[in-house]
Amino acid sequence: MVAKITSAFQKLSFADAEKLANDWFGSVNGYMRGASPFRKITDGTDDPVDERIVQGLFDEINNGYLTTHSFGDDQMPLLGNYIYSGDDFSDQTDLPAMMTQSLTDISLSEAINLFVNGRFSEVLDLLCSLGLYTFVYQFVNAGQADLVGMPVTTATDMQQVIKITGSQLTDIFERFSLPVTLAELAADLPIIDLSNAGTARNASQQNFQQNLSVVMDNSHQPFINDRGETTPVNYGFVEALHGLIQATYCLPILVQYTVTRNQLLAQIQAGDYTEPRNVAPADFNIASSLGDYVEQLARFQVDQLMPIVKRGKDDYDGLNQSGSLSAFNHLMRVAPQMRAVNPKYAEMPKQTKKLYYWLYQSSFASEIAAADRVQL
Image (cartoon, rainbow, N blue to C red):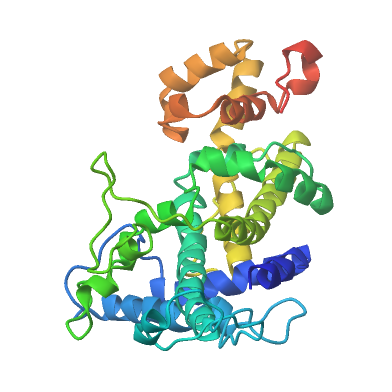
């Protein structure tokens, strides 16, 4: 199954990956609708919003996106009613007959079917679906000011941006501090703890946040190591599959944002974009697709930075422009209108600060020495 899913994702074209990201996010947001994945449902399911979310999450567990949707050249979903058809060595054992007779009557084939259609499918469908939603909710939004400073390219050619962004994904994920493992991802998502979501089901079995992140014993208690810590689940080789799926749906998001941002930077550099355009804030509950939302977000975030362009022109005309990045950093701290652009500017990485300084110089960069121009 791992080989089958890996092959299917690796064969996707960029256009296929775009469609996958759009459709998959649309499916998850169909029940999340902008809700925080970092809150726990604690008041049952009397609230209509919570009822919708709980039903959506149970649907992901039982028949999630990969179980019900095909994509690329595949005609059938990647997951579903899997039936193992390989060799079955159930009867080949060196155990005494008395012991084998006392064991549960289940074959290797049945065990594989139960695992693939159960925990394996559950992990991929629930965690990958919520992983995509959480990535957009947490990092691809107007409040993520550092987004405008990554990844490292000013190219506007789509193919070049795809190539460069793809090579930068690991660094970008590290800068976002994305969970490295599936267990860490599960531990970060209180929304999947459904132990209080209803009284008709087993509460301990419904705590998917715990069950998918911590090793449990037969009595459904977490294993504790010799340091008094709960033992995280090690998903082993499935992590590589999770990484591939994550990269596949995140790449189109970052590429769309980068291409739009770079097109706007080119307009600013050419002097065709010097005043704010009053771009409306982006909202993925209003946008027709995830791609449209990401494009709108890039336009909104760049438009919010136009006061920097205006200040740069005014300072240059007044012969008092900031002549270095350190001087510009000081300006961003002390000038009220500049501080209003980004009150957390001091916390931004140097890469984002350089972009801000580039915007400041954009109206007069051609009139100063090359050595004095900031390079992106």
